[in-house]
Image 1 (cartoon, one colour):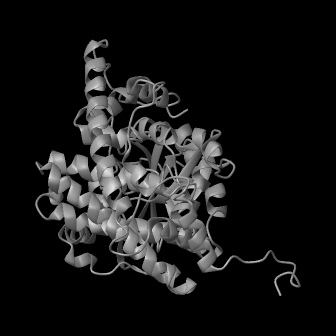
Image 2 (cartoon, rainbow, N blue to C red):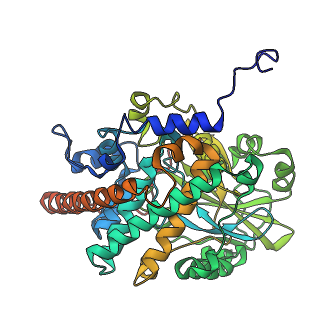
Length: 468
């Protein structure tokens, strides 16, 4: 029948499972425990310095400051270091869309298109098609680092990683038996009973557009004109450099001019709703840890009056830190528009995505566009004290499993990992890797601290970052 229809013969689920199982000959599950720096490994200080190229020079010092705060702060900003390290290790060759920066603070709550609060992976700047286990190794390491920061013993950190892997395997096996459309609609349940997640959901309820309006804007001075000269605005963004910096009129106009391309990246019905909002003001914003130094703009729009604000974030997206290594691992050709790469990766992995998620281009740089703080909230590290670490690890495993099942071949993954309770070789190996790589991260952090002490006095952070 397939040949009569001009289609390639389908591989059955059982055959795909067997193919995944055969990958154990390529890389045994217990071999994931291994971490040993490559002989030619670049200094992490050099790798990080190279990743700063193209960023706004006046903000580089601020990124270093955030990375120097703790090993976990370093880890958040050091994706290029771990990407290079993972690329030196043997891998399964089982590709999926990965988050790329899977760590405990890159999951969070946000409002779905139907208005309900959902909790999911929520940062995709590094997303790409790559070996599925790279997400698990980064998430596992983050659990160990977060546990150490909260004073957990090594055994508790190891138990959390074991739970992460176990919950991932179990849900992947379940989804492999699920009808395709049920898999597409699958939700992770019981989230409200997990203390760190329930706390994030409660915070998200308070993160409303009106709350953002009060936090980021102020009453306009008399006769202040909108960036597009369309009229007088009652409110405008605050000027709080370096975190919020007002833009010259020409730069604000360039940001607003990018809306035409952004609008075309949305579904038609969503363009209709965007068209009912009018831009009021534009500002430059410093965001995150890994993204500090990239160009990031906020646009304040109004719909049905002043009490109907919409805040859109226009965030520069360079290539994924994994991009230099993907061709060697069988991944597809690199993305041509980095904002589109991020938006499509996010849509592939998330159960529901921001209805205003899209992309645009400004001055030959690629940008992602999304809502800012529309009921968004993440898990604080303090929430992972005590039993919270293990509780949260189970959620992380399930959300990664669902994301990989949605965007990859869950039969290959399950065939490789195994589904039964005694098929836990990968679970133990992941724990050993995470412990060893957390040690490596701490050593790298110490190296960065030492290098910054030897460097010239820290440059003063400019109040007016260049937007070119």
